[in-house]
Amino acid sequence: MSEKTRFDSSLSASKQWIAAALIAAAGVAGGAYLLRGPGSAAAAPASGHADAPSHKDGEHHGEAAAKTGAKAGAQADAHQEADQHGDGEHHDDKAEAGSKDAHGAAAGGHAEGEAAGEGLVKLSPAQAKAAGVVVAQAGRASIKKQVLLPGEIRFDEDRTAHVVPRVAGVVASVHAQLGEQVAKGQLLAVIQSSAVSDQRSELQTAQRRLAFAKRNHEREKQLWQERISAEQDYQAAQQALQEAEIAVANAAQKLSAIGAGAGADAGTGGSSRYELRAPLAGMVVEKHLTVGESVTDSTASFTVSDLRSVWAEISVAAPQLPDVRMGAPVVVRATAFDSQAEGRIAYVGALIGAQTRTAPARVALANPQGVWRPGLFVDVELLAGESPVPIAVDAKAIQRPDGKESVVFVPAEGGYQAQVVQLGATDGKTTEVTSGLKAGQRYVKEGSFMLRAELGKASAEHAH
Image: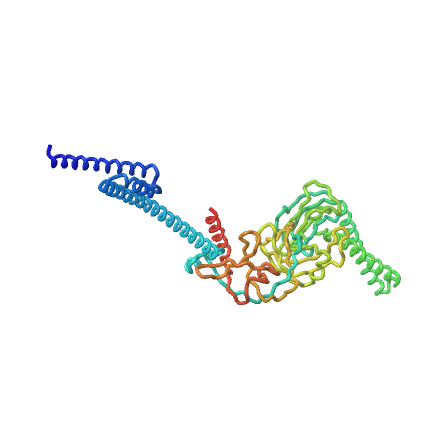
């Protein structure tokens, strides 16, 4: 073999060995990188550099180049992984921060909206008009001092008659029924009475004696004028006539006193017939007679009352007596139904009851329609005085949405705002406002109940 051939063979073997060494070094560097991670990349060059003097220059440069390439590749991979991880974490942090900021902004806006809309009922002018909302101004007013007294409707005793027979007897017939309207003098019942019979007999006897005394007096007068009879006989006849006249008048008065008349009833049913008649026009409100019943001169037979006028009887406690004066105007209201009437105090008792510790008072009421029936309980409202206040509103404007605080609705932007107020005196129609409203401020006079309902509906929807 020639010298050149041996050189070429040696050069070719060296190249093959160098290529194998480069491949092995690249494999070792890659395995070390995978085992130790990116932080160990700096150790590979140092180790490779330490081994470099044991190799030839060509081997050293080849190995260095291979190791440099492996290091660059490992660093590039590590840098790419780190960049990808860092970017992902960075983007996630930004997204999370943005979400928190957006949630906080939404919560702040919601809270601000609640604070701004609390107590506000949103209504357009057209909706308010359709709902019947009427606005007025708060201002000066007079609060009436009123006293409320309990009472009861009673018969007007000046127009009520309690009919009794005034004689003993037996009921022969009854001609009036309970609840019937009767006229004055109308026949109510017929009673057969022996006492009436005796009185009529006495009257008839007196009348006959009077007739005889008249004839005797005329005869004696004539005889005395003709000088036939003595004057003494004429005077005796004159005295007898006067006594007979007195006896007739006395018997007639007895019959008249018991309501039996002067004998006019005797021809229609005998001298014992006694007619019970209505002493005034009115309604038969009580009836206690039946046919065949025995009665006395004090038996309550009928009660007839003219119900076109009634009394409201009031019980007045001692502290209220200074406010109850004769002629004071009052309003009487029924407790069982919606009805009222105006009247005046007609009587105030001078004594206080030992048991009730109240004094009686009375109001005369006209009752043309018969609405006020005796026995009906009433409330009597008495006007005791008036006091001016600087700020007042209509009592219907006051509402209590939560059952505690009193509010008045006032016009606001977009609707009506519930405004808390402090109240003073009231008379049921007008209420004093001590704080919460200014003089001249506008408020909802009519329709506040509807606004309260809308406010409650909105609160319930917000709670759900």
